[in-house]
Amino acid sequence: MRTLYRFLRAHALQRLIPRSRVAFNPRKPVEIAGYLSMAVGVGESARLCADALAAAGRAISLSDVSTHPDETSFAGWRPLSPSAETPGSRIWHLNPPMLPRAILKKGVANFSRAFNIGYFAWELETVPAEWRNAMRYMNAVFVPSEFTRRAIAPLTRAPVIVVPHPVTEKPAADGMREKFGIDKDAFLVSFIFSAGSSINRKNPQAVVEAFRIFAAEAPRAVLLMKASGDIARDEGLRDLVASVKDDSRIRIVTDKLSNSEINGLIRSSDAYLSLHRSEGFGLTVAEAIMQLTPVISTAWSGTADFCDPHNTWLVDAALIPVVDTHPEFAGLGNAVWADPSPQTAAAHLRGILLAPERARAKAEKAREFLLRYLAENSYEKALHRLAELQTG
Image (tube, rainbow, N blue to C red; front, side, top):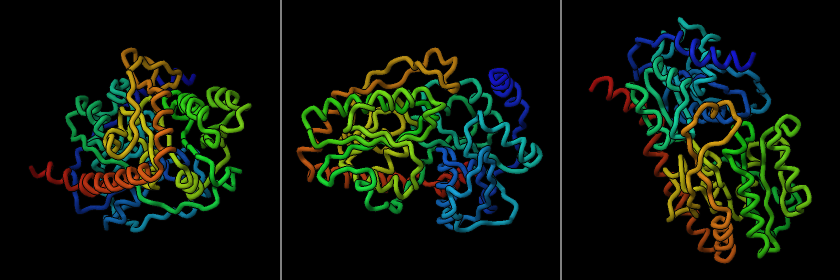
């Protein structure tokens, strides 16, 4: 039944949604629609958008279309400048497979009364048919990276504008090493990932391999990975945890942590290691940069917009065919993603260990670059660009 629903959604429901004829009005409030009360990446994307537009003085309204709301997780999150006025435009922080249900929940007539902008975070160069079908009813598309823009722009006549996630320096809890029993003088490597968004794409197996190569010559090294997912239900996560159960220097934490605790973990780390096969943006990489933690990252996909050899430690990668059971990647016969080298990553870890002051200086350069990049590609500037296109 689930397979049948996915087929009908991709090829029937997506085609039934009408495209709004409303013009973009920069003077009217912006509505942010998404999984605002869910602990998922697209939910964080919507919350970041709301905060950024409110901070810029833009009148906003919110539409929470969460499928499994958890308001207690975000009790401290509040928009700065909500508005009850009818919105002129709406930013959908949902990928196409999530859209039909949300649009039907709000009402098709309601959908047609606003200028609709899709915020689409796709992670491959090949785009699924369902995503292509969804392009026809969006008036504009925002994407988190140039990598994603190149994939999506040829599929629509609507404007496609790069708007990276507006990462900011957020509170970081102290005492995270003590919380997890990690010595003060240990060389701590960290990685944060969600198993639900394809554990193969996040590629924690390569992080483990790189760490083991490095740790053979670094007896004080510890790897701590924070994973979001259910071990009981996720076979990939379960296998990963089982593969390190006899290694006391590798910890995989699946407990629920607050944002400040996750930030504290990253800040207390000596290196952040992301050997992703592909990223639409790379939010945790950007968050690590913001916390001044030296970053080792795959040299491909969305992170390339703000990671370069001058500010991060890049891991070159050959491109290999995508092999994954995740529904998003089904039927993409020609898709490829990165295969980063654990040996190269291990060598970068050694370099950071042996030259900590140099690593700190490089991390400061990364933060300075990221701050400039985010300021130059903000939501506010993207909305101004849309206004120019309407009058141009």
